[in-house]
Image (tube, rainbow, N blue to C red; front, side, top):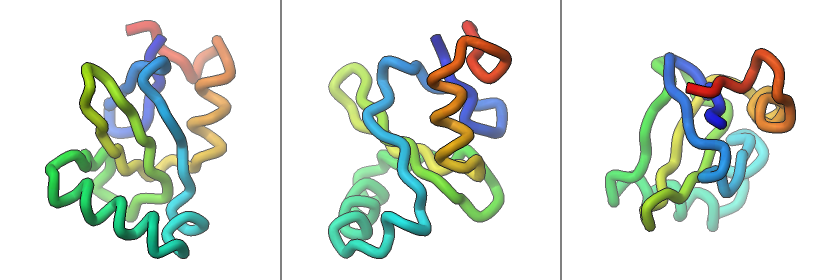
Length: 90
């Protein structure tokens, strides 16, 4: 199954390692360092043109990706837990 994370972008549900709220997690210097290193490595993908609220960490084919999205972490988590309209089998 695929999860819609914003701006016509989807990620494979089985590839998701974590869903993180940016306001709560960027307090930690370790999270900020991780995001900076991911940006330098070219692993950050913006799924929004607005101010991001959440980042979704995925690993697929041995590559980690960080998706920045305007959706809340709770919304993405609900979509991953449901089989209803939030989850798209693309």
